[in-house]
Length: 196
Length: 196
DNA sequence: TCTTGCTATGCACCTTGTTGCATAGCAAGC
DNA sequence: GCTTGCTATGCAACAAGGTGCATAGCAAGA
Image (cartoon, rainbow over all chains, first blue to last red):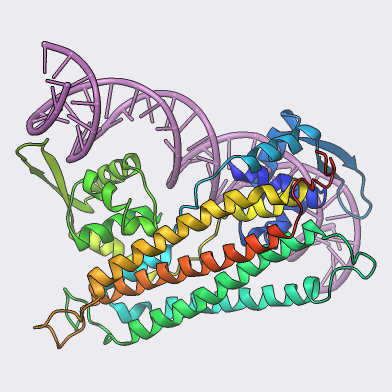
């Protein structure tokens, strides 16, 4: 299970509470791994029991207290072991591709609106990534650290570049899909005919 | 749940047994939706109980008999309803991206072999797609059917083009990842130091 | 005062997905 | 006769993920 490891990586990048992790999973990490706050709290509890993370109660003023989690040595070891073990290339699940092939047995043209909606979502996400890239990686590292490479920064950047490449590819492909769908007349259900 | 609908689409393209569907999910459909034979048999059973599919016992010689499933009218309606309902853009889960960001806290260079393995898997899949594209879509549709568009064929092709674009994007990105990882010295664990 | 809304944590239940195993027909080879 | 291997279907148990709901502190505004 990689949710464990995604949380460990996030906590190594910066310790935080379950709530804060859930916010991160709506942003940066969430671009390549999704999780609800329920899953996160559950996994944190289990990892605490296994000694992978340490907890610290943090009193707060003006808002409820929180539990700040950080990675324990056993957690680092578990992450190292996972990094060293080979994993299978991801198994994809594209609902939209199922819909597109399914549209052949319904009305292809009626799918155009849905595809446009997805295209817009990918455009929005791309724009968001590009803003983040300029903000976080627009300038060269830090003025004083001209020598050694900052692994955390460089690797975060290459993952972000992957996200950007993915969104661009998706937008181009969805344009292709739209052009293909547009070649069909509305109401061309192969079974019920043009009249529905 | 889209597995139901993926199975319905596959059965509309061609009726078949659970076993045959499982084989398809290792090939064409499996490129954008994965399922084991266990899931398929379970879903087929449920869809049969709901009247979405019809079953026909097919005696076979030289091998065990099979049950051939086909889509019933209620199944077509369920598929139509799903096609008309908006879905959320997919939630991605990229283990490899978690590994890449995690490598910043371990030895980045030690991830090179794993990334190369994934790159090769994507090259293999791309080659496989391209062979299939030439085989199935290399020639224009059918000589006699020069008039109306074949929705099933065109939409299968645009989905395949999406798979091809995805694999090409991944290969390019993994080249970028490899170039990035190569800039780190082996054994540069930020905590244990170069000596390990 | 009451409501709204954000922060913060968590339980219970249900659905999905995965793993391991079991059964059985039939063919081919040793 | 025995084993191996492919076709074909399925159960049981478990792991993972998702939905709905509950609780609670605190601030701001109607």
